[in-house]
Image (cartoon, rainbow, N blue to C red):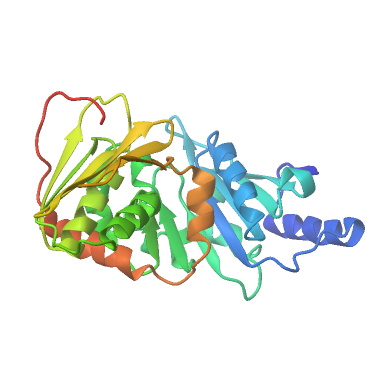
Length: 321
């Protein structure tokens, strides 16, 4: 069910929600959190679809805020249009889309305050361009957790440095979330004998992959080994390509071969094929909503390990592993 509320107010939106609950039995009971999606106009549907899928694991109220303060240098009309989605159009959540322009878009925090679930955690997600300091942004100050995506920024690698400088406990970035399967597989390999130390690390990935840099920083900090990372420009395959760990007993290499499959080679063992798909928005969002306390390991990697990593190995040509 979709209800349009053109040229409305937050009070009228709230009353419409109450009326829907009374007439149709749509209730907020069981909602575990409020998810605020700060999206640009025209790009919100992909984020809403991911939130709807994730809501089946985390029932929630989704507030989508799309603001347009000005148009072509001219003052935009002060206006708020809203849309409420429930039932089959909202997964296991209720979605409220707020499209504000002009003066109505000047205070994002006031737009959502009257629609937050009482006594429930708040998570703010910027699926596109993120503010310079998420923790100080209007929608970030009211959130327990703040989710950004460095890969969606104009310069993904430079965005990591900005994240390090602006970090506040509760911040998280999908560049880190996408590493979960890589980190789990590498940890599992190193948990097996022989337990010889890793002497050097080499990570390869595309130059638009901040996850490659974060994985290198994590390995460098965790293994205390010489770490080299290579960012391939113009690669046909995006994301992380391969990780090579050198030990006195031989090298371990985990490389993505395409189609969500990776190849694992180890000394004196047969080559294994492993499922290592790229994580989509739904998987990343659902993963981050499982915990609402600060991710301390991410905080250490983005603020400390990244600073000790050093620059990437420069190359001019290359192909994906």
